[in-house]
Length: 193
Image (cartoon, rainbow, N blue to C red; front, side, top):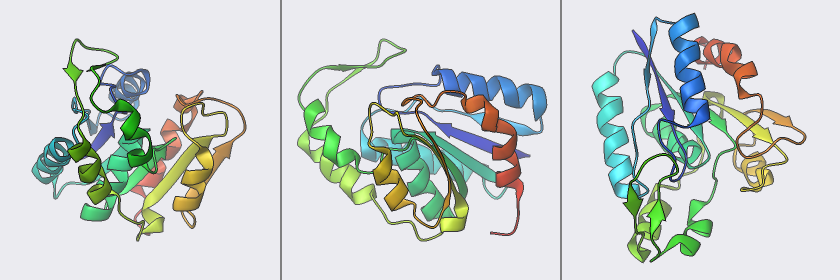
């Protein structure tokens, strides 16, 4: 059975709107694809370890990766490490640039009671995970230019040569994401990459 791994964004959770939307859609339209969306901490090394353990437990069955915001950063890291296909939704390209604003302050998850505190060492960890795209055919980039959180042009540049869908307007949440779910599965299941 194939698996779809949805990676949520910074301080988000499996309760995020797109994660829930994707889970409901998959169970209705593609019950043959198992859905996974682990709760990830904002700590890079812990996130890497958790994602590695999950992916390695799912292989060698097909594993499809979908990541939103910081989840897009982690989806890229997994796609490169394991040669997986990934759909990236308004992905964070250089999270080390915005992380300093979150250091040494109490952070709270958007959907749970979990709280966190980032330290300077966490920036070093995220920089170590920031790798170049070497398999452009493995990616589909979904961007909306109205993203109020991230500069979409950074993603356009990093994922040059990859399949890109850029919509005018919208926001960081990527309005109307559900329109692409069918096409995402088609993209994942194509074998000519």
